[in-house]
Image (tube, rainbow, N blue to C red; front, side, top):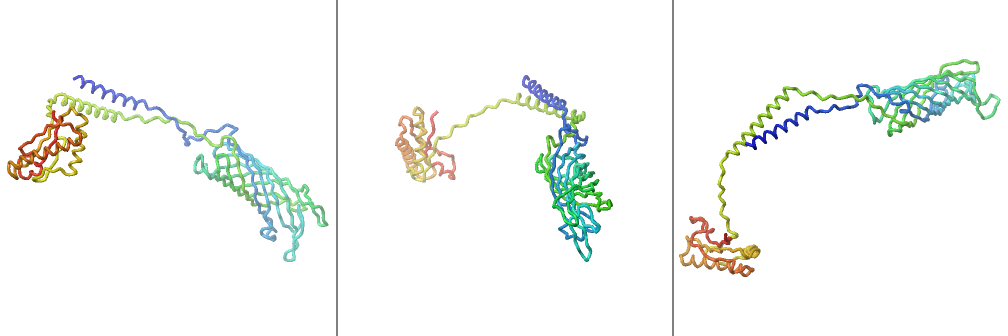
Length: 403
């Protein structure tokens, strides 16, 4: 009965620990992007960019130029900061060379061009500007912020001011140099940056921009708006921390249903009752007497009808048997010869029994077994049992250890 009480106590302890584990579930804390993003410190999310490219200036008469002659170089450098994964600002300085074509002169005149009997004035200007842009990360806005994203599409727009330098030429010749022009102008721009992150710090980008210029186009002070399409390839380096963290929110585990807990408790009680019943049955079961089976012979050698000769295989077997016997020279063995009682006369069978037992004895002695370990005898009964179908099993010699 003590065993039954102990079993019940162990089962109850197990169930108690399981219930405690269920009730002791800890509250976990995870980042939840659905709650917005935590703003980083002011020193984080700064970047610097350097870029270079080409531009294509639109003027009324520029189509008279050769197509490739309308392209000019431009470059820029920017410093900026992201205030969130979506919104940022950048300020920078840029250089843009403008090539135009007019019929009434213009700032930056450096030659004439005749086409279809019409004389056109060629002009070009080097404009150095300061720019301020507001940026909107479309990828993070539409698809959600994800650290490690390779591509980001960034839309931006801004304003600037250009200082102009023009070639110091005149129609009567002059020096091959540049001088300050008189058409400094306000600018506005809008563009799309296609940024590809090479690492957490470095990004390669393609910037496609349209810039509006309020140029003073000729010597009469006529100011007109012109559009310049620009393309840049640039490299951005991010300073300090460049990623964003979501707010940390608690995750409260679901409270288990009481009905489910009660059902599990009832099932556990049923298992405990079943174990107690099995234990009682085991304790009340009568003790069974185990009858030790008679130990079989160490070896049995079989013969063909009327023969007492050992084969080569039998000799190898007896050599192995002799090694077992020599391991304990104090142990004795009985060598018993048999012959079947269904063939031959009684005298012939008696002679076969003795000859077979003697042959096995000689083989064991040759292999080093002491004669004192051997009791050699015969048995005139059948070895296996009654029945002519077993006669092949009755023609044998057995070697059995003495008790």
